[in-house]
Length: 413
Image 1 (cartoon, one colour):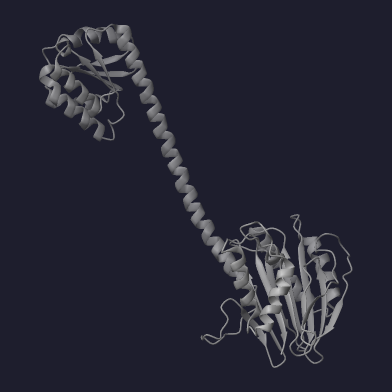
Image 2 (cartoon, rainbow, N blue to C red):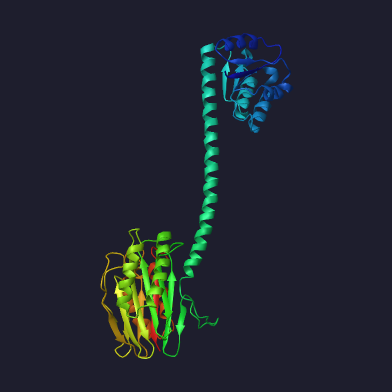
């Protein structure tokens, strides 16, 4: 049963008549015979679903103040208020102004006397329906706020965990050799190995918190060097897990097998049995004998290595390549070999570089990689990878990465 509080001056005869009619319609009506200054306490005591206020000449100002006060309190702000105007309102400018002020102060509607019960009941039911809608909206808003807060807290936790995961993934990269803090030091390039014959450097820029690219530099007990670069299809957490599995398997297999083609054969079979996500892996694995400077190379569906021959001042591509890892079991991978001479360079990339687009939607492409490498070599750039990153940024005009970017440079000194 809906509760209605009928507020009027003590001398008014309207409440007694109206109360009987409203109770006959199924409402619980309270009509406290108190002075206006006690109306607020009456509202607090009865907690009505709707308030009827009789608008009389001697209560106009107080009524406006009360409406305003009710709208300022959280427990009364949604209670509908209907103003019932006495006969004195008709043709009375002051009464009309008071009515408008009452509506502006927070009253929901007005009904001028004399009025019929059907009209009053219609306004009461409409006001109660609106109150129910407001209360339901508030409940839904509170629930939504609660869900949003929970999602916010979960998002913070996920971000923390992704930050830790990214740090762990960064630890999969080979350690960098500290460089002097001066103008000659590279900005992006990390030097991972250097002696009097060879320098190996690289750059890794993930587009997400966790990337699917990975490269590694391994020094074996016989002083040989193993270099790999890898690209897992997809991004995010699954790709990050696969890179960790790849590194573990690669490290173990390369300490058992020396031939890069055999390494990829065993690596493919092992990953084929482990990775069941539908992802695949492209990779290049090279091994350098520091005594003979012979470089052996095998590829699994990865972009061909760029080989700069200093004697010819030309860049060639090492095109012996095989099927991406995890596609098919027991795949043989072809082997390519070159003899490195001082000044020669071997450059490895992931396809995130060649597939970068400018604002017009044109891909950077591998031909631009070749041309820019030649230009940087001619200019005597000390760190070709830094030069390429700068050129890529100019080409894309600083647009965000859409794929991970990795590159490794092997230089015969």
